[in-house]
Amino acid sequence: MNLLEVKNLNAWYGVTQALFNVSFDLKQGGITTILGANGAGKTTTLRSMCQTVKTSGDVVFVGKTIGGLATDKIVRMGMAHVPDGRGTFTGLTVEENLRLGAYTRKDKDAVGQDMEKIFERFPRLKERLYQQAGTLSGGEQQMLAISRALMLRPKLLLLDEPSFGLAPLIVQEIFEIMRNINKTDGVSMLLVEQNASLALNLADHAYLLETGNVVLSGPAEDIRADESVRRTYLGY
Image 1 (cartoon, one colour):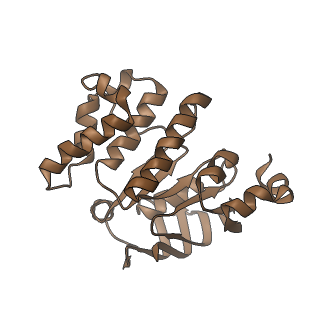
Image 2 (image 1 turned 135 degrees about the horizontal axis):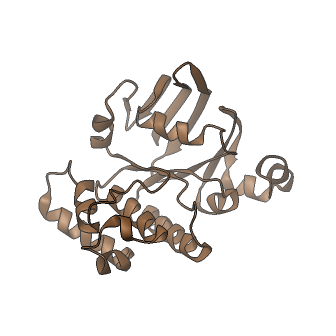
């Protein structure tokens, strides 16, 4: 069963078109990655899911067309976005950031339980609960950004370059936690990542963008194993 279906998606910034008839889908409980060089349209694809850029085409999430919907309504349907550059509220504490992630929820008792689950996965956030987010390290800010999105209890997590600017050991830790979140909580993920090797190890399906067009797609395992594809399109 597909959680997300995208057909003939186009996107614009003003008069400049950034995506051209992009089509892909994401299965319930799956992890799909979108790969490509800088400027290929990866971030624009995620923004299009949230309807924060001008789009045309068909985007169906949990069986409902979301094209033209306000972003807050899409969030309430269960789509959470972790943008590039972390996206934390730097002047607020860790606790305040986490509680903001749950602002649409009415099950207040369960919010506290979910926060404890966050602390089990990211114990450093508990140690820094009352610390301003802007004073955290880059890795801690990324952990907080992911955690704040999880406080929504999302069906789909959009992740934009979660490895960017982080030390390899921190990246490995975060990606292992993301894998655990997918497996144990059943959270589907749409991952944009410039580190193709990292993304293909996590995802089950992959799409490659070039200048706003899908030029390659398939099971992540097949793309990872095909040396000619990796050399031609992914550069490693």
